Length: 216
Picture 1 (spheres, rainbow, N blue to C red):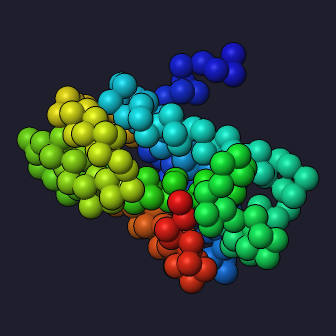
Picture 2 (picture 1 turned 30 degrees about the horizontal axis):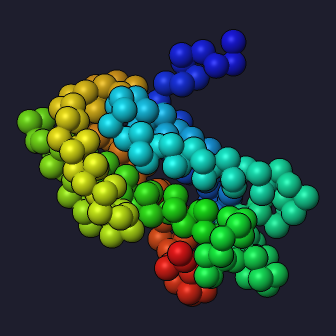
Picture 3 (picture 1 turned 90 degrees about the vertical axis):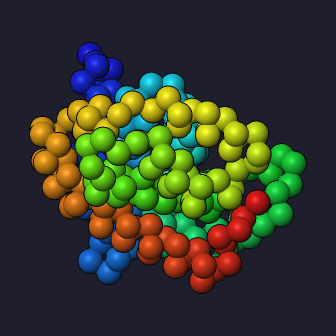
């Protein structure tokens, strides 16, 4: 069956491989692999129970929108994040002022994932460098407060704060990575995070150059 439990299981190696494929030689970011990387990160969020539902549900929704663009008649324009930004800006498709029923642009949709990626990058880096008895709730809340929180309304920030309090301990996080011992997890995070960081940085600079970082 295509939807077996194994398919739904998170594996850090898969995410590492996907983000490695994300960047071309000239540092273009592949939309297909970016979306695939996010599918893996959603599995990670879901493997921790309902704590992260408020982020994973939104991420799934954004992934579906981007896949729709990739599979649509303008699909070739969405092959890389760079080509998407150029195409949407050149054709006035970016919703600079959110208007009622105006369809979501690829630029705005991806920006939501981009912001969440920063939070996960910071959190996983803290997880990587922390000691076994470090509080994951504190690490996660700190990462959230310096990244995603500034883009969320008060009610979501409040819910997030409560959710982080019930996070499992660090050993559980090491287990859900599905790559072996804690030492192996730390080593693989050491490989994966620079790749995720580079994809984030390239996207950040592209959006900054085009004044897209504050899309409503």
